[in-house]
Amino acid sequence: MRRGLAMDRVATIAGVRCHIRQREDRTYWLIQTGVGPTAARSVAERVLTAQSMSLIMSTGFACALVPAQVGDLIVGTSVSSVHGERGWRMGSDCVLCDAVARPGLLTVAREAGLVARIGTIVSSETVIWQAEEKHRLQRLTDATGLDMESAALAEIAQERGLPMVIVRTVSDLADEDLPLDFNLFLRPTGWIKGMQELIGHPSSLVGLNRLRKQSRVAADRLTEWFQHYAKTDGESLRLSR
Image: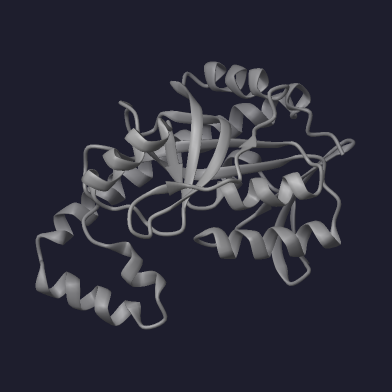
């Protein structure tokens, strides 16, 4: 995203490192929230308390819950949280994405030569790493994509009366397991257990290399989208502030 947008400077707002691009009367803020809804909510609250914005975009990688290719774009129509305690259930926090901005998002995708898939996004508190669980989640929600942060960002946007959009690229598919349970690495002592899991299952290294390659493709496609987005200077996306 930094390559695609060619940010001008770096500033710290409310303790959060922000990359900033200024173009005439528009300012774009690129902010890394960290993994998961708790981190995303905390960073968004801090930044939006200190700095006014006109639109929030949740971007990064996603899992495709429908047939897709790695690197395809996913544009959200709405987003909800999902919770996995004793079986999957939908949260009551469905937020609609901004429909006015959506045609501009898709125009940028078309200009970049990217395949765009449009639909509902669901956000989980944990990494869904097994194909079986991905399929269960898709049957419950009929969602197009899965991530971990968009629902939290949408909740903050709704609280503050801000439009919100989701633009992510596919890094993993519904029919494939991730090489290991990445939730291990999200826990305080998880790195030790995660490394033990890797040592105990050397075949995971093959899967990790596959995921690395897929993530590179997803990153390149997202860069291409932002490069074309930057050429429009956001005019069709209502990003003026």
